[in-house]
Image (cartoon, rainbow, N blue to C red; front, side, top):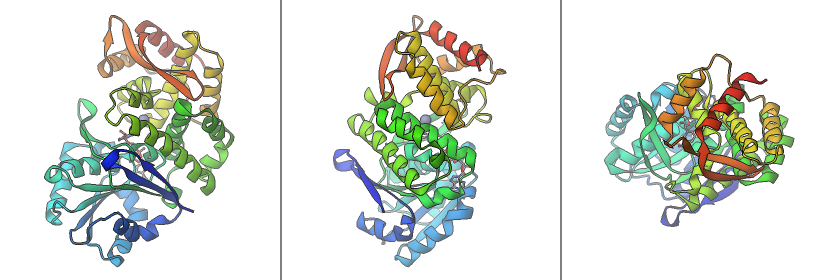
Length: 365
Ligand SMILES: NC(=O)c1ccc[n+]([C@@H]2O[C@H](COP(=O)([O-])OP(=O)(O)OC[C@H]3O[C@@H](n4cnc5c(N)ncnc54)[C@H](O)[C@@H]3O)[C@@H](O)[C@H]2O)c1
Ligand SMILES: [Zn+2]
């Protein structure tokens, strides 16, 4: 069964297909969505993903009459750089990509962000298709944010560039390491926490199935996660207001990633701690205790971290946060859960209270 949903963005609307084994029909999907056979395609991937999933994609495309060349970058966040961007653009030129060509991102968020930004900038913008191969990429492949990093800041060189479609073949996830499975599920839970109490409860009840990559559970969870992201992005593509709610847990999360030098904690792990912190802050502000207990219980069930490792320095975390977010007169904008499945964008959160929470996240077990 293939599940389908649409990211509703007027003339830039596009479909997300989710199903097991749908890459076997990749050429048919491309044809259906008007991807030209007259111009070459570039499939961008990384060396982990290439090992398992590149060959069948290239053969199915060739069988379907497409000329597809591939370019493989080193796996890992370091490939989201201007230097690697230049290499991929070199590959586009060598393969003879023209204005009617398409860049195909086969991989996780790193490949999606990098290849998407190549597509956004090559010849001032050509088409691209996202083929996510991680659970986290149910988030990153939807919404059109594409970017590379600068040594001083993450995702700071980028664009909004929506794909033609997202082809999510859940059988590619079977080769994903367990740690990446859990980290990706953290964003799925986030989509429940910001939007849908029922889905949050479903995630909790199906934790074991999700961690164990049960196909039915996985497909439903990814479908619901993508649906929340699509709904939010459709209402606010360029993050003027509502889209900010997708950043639940990311204020502390990004700071932890920065302090750890993007090594110790994966993104999904950093934001699970951040979401527990946001829940503590919410209770501190007078919201029901249940927001904290339920949030913490869910992340524990998924084996995701809920506390900051003790050796992290509170001041360094606060500095990283100030670098990332605007404080004015000791106040900051913060995504605060007000119930399970509901958040508010609070523009008046005391930075002092945030420091208190960071401290508490370090002390308590
Ligand atoms: N654009 C957005 O809206 C958005 C949103 C969230 C995150 N992101 C970005 O996403 C990135 C993180 O994404 P990620 O967690 O997918 O990281 P990733 O792309 O680095 O993938 C994680 C690891 O899994 C490997 N891998 C991927 N698919 C595999 C598979 N099927 N089998 C085996 N190994 C596989 C990769 O090689 C890598 O080692 C970050 O750079 C983050 O900034 C972007
Ligand atoms: Zn995130």
